[in-house]
Length: 147
Image (cartoon, rainbow, N blue to C red; front, top):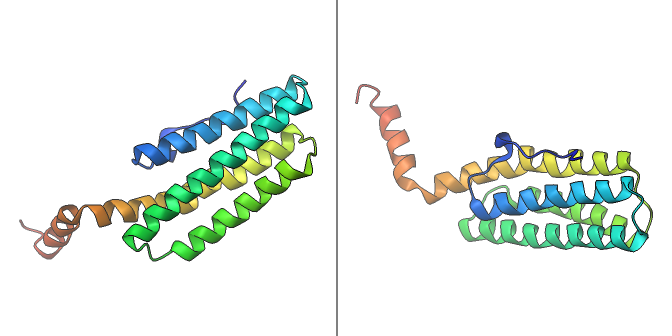
């Protein structure tokens, strides 16, 4: 049973970033299912490690993109990444068994919240930055509403 559902509102339009986000959701569901099924702690630890490594890789991809384009909110975005990666690292390193409620709390507040509140505004900015024609057309139509 999946408790984390990907939906269109979470789509950024960047294929690489969206694929990585979907992978994190799938891994979170796999972790939840493993805990609920009473799987071996080594299996659970392996999934936790996979989530941690996937998130760290994903954060690097986003941060390189933001740096390459001069994203003005980069420091705040990176700080959010640090908070999330620190939480995942503590969960992975502590070896504590996670309850389903803890998993729901972590992934709803951090992943889903991060995507909606931090990633999507960044992706919209990146799209505008990558498409000066779009920006120019927007400015032109705003200046000449009759055109």
